[in-house]
Length: 87
Image (tube, rainbow, N blue to C red):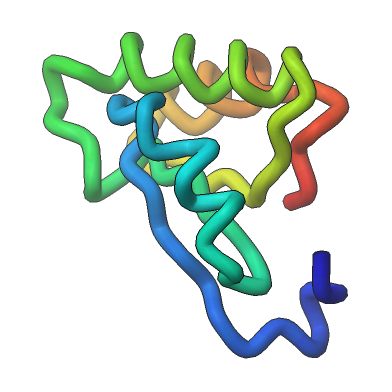
């Protein structure tokens, strides 16, 4: 992967679409953003968090875009603190 400081392309992937995670990694984008915020409907936030956490824990990698909403950001951070988290 290209260092974040020199990355030219970022690909956002909705956190509730785990079937797209590996495809995104294979796309050639410099960085993958696993989106838990705007790309995920309110009723699917918990599901998205689980998918991203599982992906990161099983060898996947990416930068996470977390929710800013009170309470949600902490739930996001606690769930996704996994080896593959890049930022």
